[in-house]
Image (cartoon, rainbow, N blue to C red; front, side, top):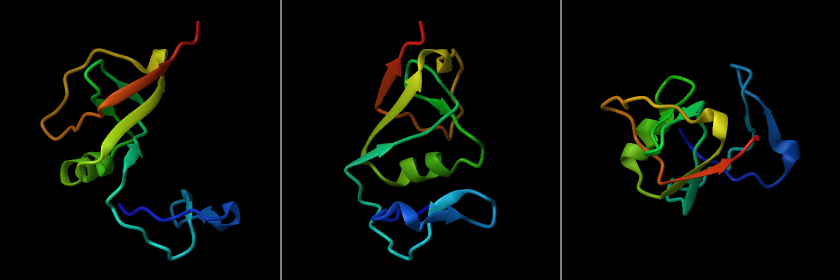
Length: 97
């Protein structure tokens, strides 16, 4: 997983899997100040269930920047993390009620 600078929204387009990404070859360092981590479900300890593949868990295990996830309250669930799971430091939770 690599991070690229997004300088213009016209530079976004689908890859061969149909996932939008930055088309330019402008790669930036993996030395990030803050990483906003996506996920489907989270527990109160910051562990997450993502979309499969473990890309963020692998990246987080190698890089130690600050992490947050922006989630809705219905994404909270009780589950035990697996050995390879990496938690985010902070959850920002929006209520839907």
